[in-house]
Length: 250
Length: 250
Image 1 (cartoon, rainbow over the protein chains, first blue to last red):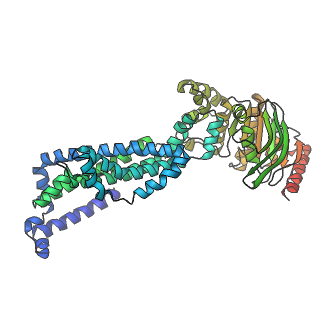
Image 2: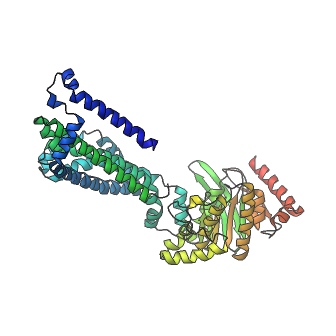
Image 3: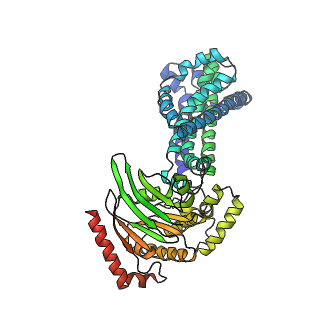
């Protein structure tokens, strides 16, 4: 009860303060701005309701990019982690590169990806996947390496093939860590989607935020940010729920 | 199945752990290995099981002296119970059957009979963390037994238990081996445990391990443990073993 009430109370307090400060024009005056540039929470709520069709349409575009991007990162990341776990040589060769690749600002190379792959959904999925690949790969590999070597010996002595050792010991042992990676990826993915859409898109919440900014549609822009944040929260919640359903032994 | 260890030496890098050990274990006999901590008892056990190959010398089990052959004839029970937390007690016990391709239902059916016999009835569906230390060891032992190998290699099976549970588990194992005799190699640092459970006990020196003494136990696996371990001949054997252990630790 307390766990929910306190943060909710704080949110109500902050919204209330914002509502008063914005509707009386206090913020706009202090910043020397036109009133319509500082929407109050009630105006944002109104924009959210009035534009619900438009927001839903664009949210669906962004959500699809996010889900496909995470899926691609999951397949590539888990695949890479398994290969690196299986072949020491590959791990020693590739792991430093994977870590070093994190220093490449994806935001900066995004325009090149767009030039190469066009304005369709492809480059957006690629950019999101690039953001999510690292936490998923590193955490999956960590998880696989956390397997107790004694458990592997025990399984060998119980006639387990390499595949059975993987399936019954290493893979389950890696799951909690893999889910940590997925939860990080889920936090990154909406941000990556917005970046990807800013570079070049004809639909999506990121694109809507960008064009609203250009047209001084500040209330609707806040409404889009709200939808994006809500979407990210739901995704994080779903990831945590999936973890609880799958990793039942923790 | 007869176990023969001839002139076995082993090193990890520059660290010599075993120094030309020769030992023999009779078929259906229990051979105890006692020695100070870190002397290489566990290494010797892994060599016997075929989980590693010795640097020099030969180990043969029923005539098979290659690693694969030994691996096929030995079931290894590691130091900690290593029950897999993602499986129920019965699925842990039935691991070897599943590894050999038996279906889940049939494997559970086979294990269920043994649960009854070993005082674990009613705990088939329990998760490992719901079981007491003693029960976990029983499930781990069942897992080793169900593998159906002629040789059981037990590495300090009761080291993690409190004194009372340990004495109970020794009686329990003695009873299990009376009804289902196997060739057993038991590693322990507890002289009393070795002399109660084993037919013969080899006392190893500190690293690099060599054999300091070989003793015949006076009342192996006697039904009345308390009477057996307080009998004068048992006490004398224990003193002799302790003396050898002290000499070997110097």
